[in-house]
Length: 324
Image (cartoon, rainbow, N blue to C red; front, side, top):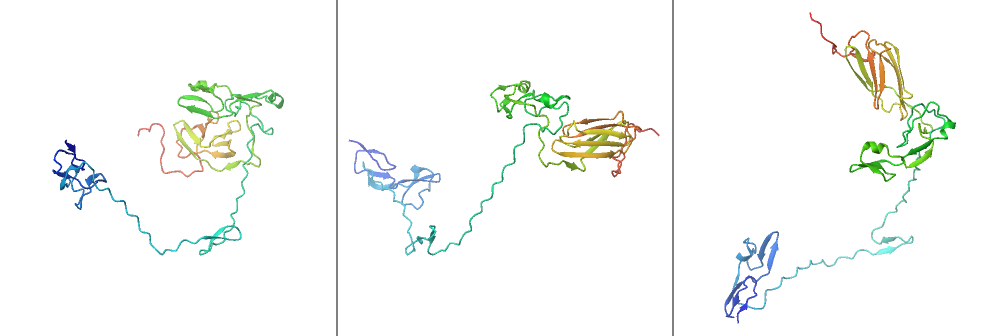
């Protein structure tokens, strides 16, 4: 009856038990992408193909797998005569200490005193502060505006409807973190009614104790001009429009008094290089600057904005040059 040889690399069906078998006597080896068979050859990976490696010849076929099992990895030999580590010895304070290596005394760590957080800012107007007219409520979602006749008796009847949370914009939807309503259009978002009610609006807020205004000595400025006007910009952020004062004192002088909402103030008399028409000159307060439109009286070119600034060697020309 024909039988199948189970030797590695043979697998031949045989009928003669004395027929020579060609097979791999060692186990397969897979190392770093290479494949081979453990064989008497010093280099089992001498060929890239597993079936082309060296075969054992001169042994008959077998139906029993007698391939030797791989030898277990040798354990590292531990060096002898090594002293064991010192055992901890208990001392009087209960802390373990080794008998061979003394531990230096450590100073107790000082716990830093926790700094108390600053008191929260009041959410109501300071009674000592005047409320200017046309001042918008500072609470989110409330669009109330103060009137010139705002008094303590009238303010008791005020009701502020606002959002205590923050605006939330996510994947096209718009809303507030304090309520669940969401809309798609920005105009609808601005019309979402507040979810909290409180007596009295907050038009000016409260001023911190012992807080003084920081005087700004100088601010950055620049200007450009046409044959008829000079447009100058004084860069001061967060100007309070209600308290700011801009006066064209004379054809050669402008007085500016610019307080800001973050307790800063720039006040100066600006001497102008040329003469202006005080009746036609105007000013405009923006988010980051004050813009002055100064109408010239004589149409001459200004090399600098201020008369006390150092002039440059550049010649600025406005209008069309005359023909010789």
